[in-house]
Length: 495
Ligand SMILES: Cc1cc2nc3c(=O)[nH]c(=O)nc-3n(C[C@H](O)[C@H](O)[C@H](O)COP(=O)(O)OP(=O)(O)OC[C@H]3O[C@@H](n4cnc5c(N)ncnc54)[C@H](O)[C@@H]3O)c2cc1C
Image (cartoon, rainbow, N blue to C red; front, side):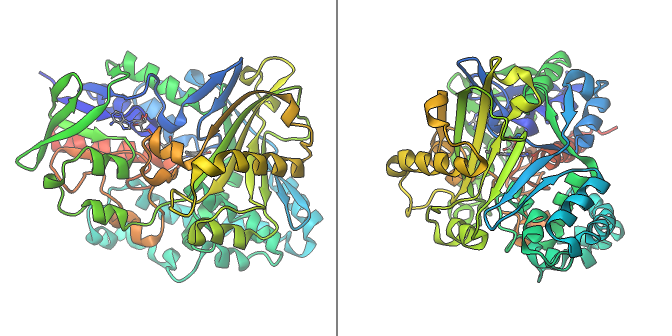
C-alpha cells in the first residue's frame, strides 16, 4: 500500500507539494478549511467582477514551470499568462514618475528622463545582480538543516554577498544618486513585507528578477495558478477536501501520525503544514509537543507588515491607470517607520493599485473595471483598533487614489469588499495579520527560519511563506520542492 500523506491547507505551497507527492505515487489528501482552494492566492468574486485576494505579481514563473514539467504538464498550457510591458507605473509623491519596463533600452531612456546622471548605472546594477543571483540560487534551492549547511562548498560562495551590515537601501545608494531611483529599485522589499531600510541588501535580487525575467499576469489573475494546480493535483490522484478544518496535528513518540478534524482522526505516514506558520504552530500543535517553538518563542519573532485592502468594482474604465500602479509616499521613510516601528496609521501612505482590465477582459464586465487597492499597514498591534479605523481608512485610501488621477471614483463603486489586518488574522487565520509571514531579516532566514523538515516532530514538514526560502510565490514553490524531496527521502521513496 502506498504511503499516506496529509497536507493541511490548499494554498500555493500545499498544492505544489500535492502535485509532486501524488506524481511520486503517494496517497495524498489535502484538507482545506475554506470552500475554495488557493488560500491567500484565491479569488474574490461578486457582481461580475473578479479580484485576486492576495498576489497579483507573478514573478519568475520558471520554478512553477519546472514543477509542472516534473509531473508531465505544461504550465503555459494549463494557465495562460501574459508578460506585462510596461510592467508598472511608479509615481513619486516627491515628484516625477517612471514607466518601468523589462526592455533594457527603454528602461535606460526612462531613467534618463528622471535622472540623466543615473541612467548608465542600470546596466551595472543588472550585471552585478545577475552574478549575485547565480551565487545565491543554490541557497534557495537547498534545505537548511543547520548552521553547518553554510559550510557546504557550493553555498560558501554566497557569503561575500550577505553583507549583514548593509541594508537594501544602502546597497542601492551605491548605484543611483537620485533618491527616487533608490526607491524604484528597493520598494520591492515590500513584497516580503519589509522596509528597504531594514531589509538585507541581498534582496536587490528582487528588483533584478523583475527586470531580467519580467512580471506575468495569469489570465483570470494569480488565483488561476492555484485553480490550475488543484486541477492537476486531482488528476494525478490527490484528494482535495474543502470545508475541512484541521484542529490538531497528532503526535506520538515525537512523530506526526495524523490530524484531527471535526469528523475525527485521520492517520497518515507524514503530515505537511501549509497553513500560516504562526497560526498553525500555536493553534494546531499542542504545547507538550513543542520545545523550540513555544507560544512565547513565536510571539518573540519579527513579523512582516500587513495590508489594508479595497476590492472595488467600478462602473466605467480607468484608463489613467496602467495594469500595476505604485504610489510612493512623499515621506517614504516616515511612512515605513510608522508601519514597522511606531505601529500607527499613516495619513499619506504609499499604496498599490491594480487595474487588470487593461490586460485581461475576464476580470470585469465590459466597460467596467475591477480595481485592487493595497495599502501597507502595521500588522495587528494594540495601537490600532480596526473596528474604529476601518471606515476612516477607507476614506484615506480613496483620497490617495486621486493622486493617480482617480478623482470621481466613489460614486462609480458598484461592488466593494474591505479586508483589514484584523480580517487577515480573524478570517484568514494569518498570525497577527502579518500577510507576508515572518520577516526576512538575516536572523530569520536560511537555517534560522522554521525548517522544511520541521524540528518539533518526525515526519512533519512545512511548506509556504513561513518556512525556507520565504514568502512570495516563486520561493513558496521552491519550498514545496524542498519539502517534498525531504519527505520522499524520509519515506525511502526518493528517486
Ligand atoms: C495581500 C497580499 C498580496 C500578495 N502579493 C504577492 C504578489 O504579488 N506576488 C507574490 O509572489 N506573492 C504575494 N503575496 C505573498 C504570497 O505569495 C501569498 O500570500 C501566498 O498565497 C502564500 O502561500 P502559502 O502557500 O504560504 O499559503 P496560504 O496562501 O496562506 O494558504 C494556506 C492555506 O491553509 C489553509 N488553512 C489554514 N488553517 C487551516 C486549518 N486549520 N485546516 C485546514 N486548512 C487550513 C488556509 O485556508 C489556506 O488555504 C501576497 C500576499 C498577500 C496577503
